[in-house]
Length: 234
Image 1 (cartoon, rainbow, N blue to C red):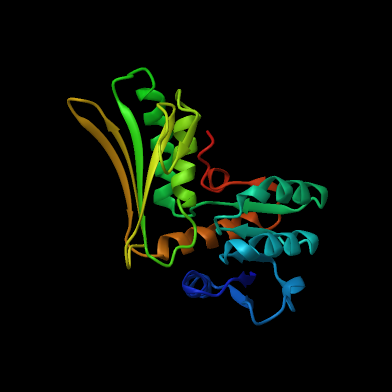
Image 2 (cartoon, rainbow, N blue to C red):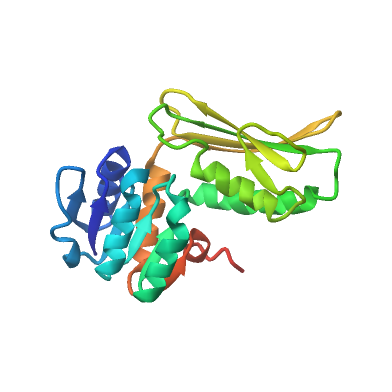
């Protein structure tokens, strides 16, 4: 499989290593200093860039009929436009706030727990996310996905970094050097606390998941998520 890497920072370099180990070829390493030359020869593109260029990367792939997997967060105000572009071009697109297998299992656990806890009003939910200081978006896309999983299965209506009412889920976002990503969900009452947590030890889990998603996406058309890739929709 010929892969175009859109973004060649720390994550891009780890994705490259894993892709090569799995027998794939990297034919483009897109940075701010080079062009999309060679993209048309790719079987699939993987985007781990920055919020300011992600939409350009995704739309360029969709307009070139290249399946695109994006793990860049912080650009989702344009997500619906990218979905519409994908549909109009009969393209293939996966966006994931987190491609780690463990995190996607955590998403399912979080949704199930939220549904179970919805009837127990004495428990108030909150989320904590911790990442390295180089992370550009706050809160993390993963934390937003966690919050949305709770909102979809409870009486909460929104999330906020500064909670202003009882229907908001507070997300506490912390930036600490060298932390790949830790996400915790707390259900606090006067008498006890229930907590679920995912701790990433390194970037390899995110990178491997994105390569697996790219392998799965080739030959398909439509808009998908990691739930489709990992067959978690059943």
